Length: 81
Image 1 (cartoon, one colour):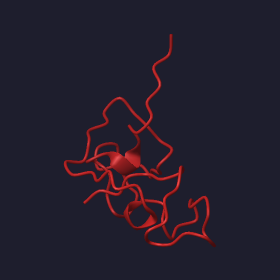
Image 2: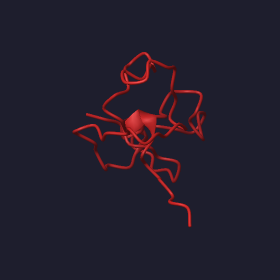
Image 3: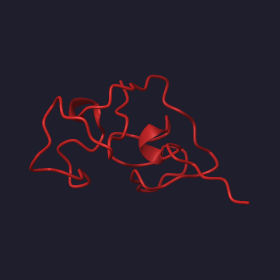
Image 4: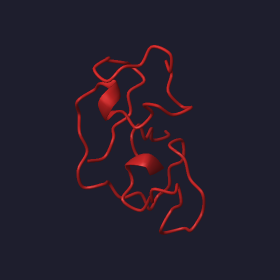
């Protein structure tokens, strides 16, 4: 049986940098990547609205023309504090 990792991705990992480079593996990363060296960022928020979403204002936003700061969305991804 395979293990499903829902939020264990690079955008939530303490090893990711602001320039989308993994500080551990020294490779370019994105929110779709996972690895066995994943380490949670210390502060994640669970306020599920566009203003706290890591995809807000980016090409990966599911609803870029509708997104607004207080909108709720099922495609929400946590933004580290």
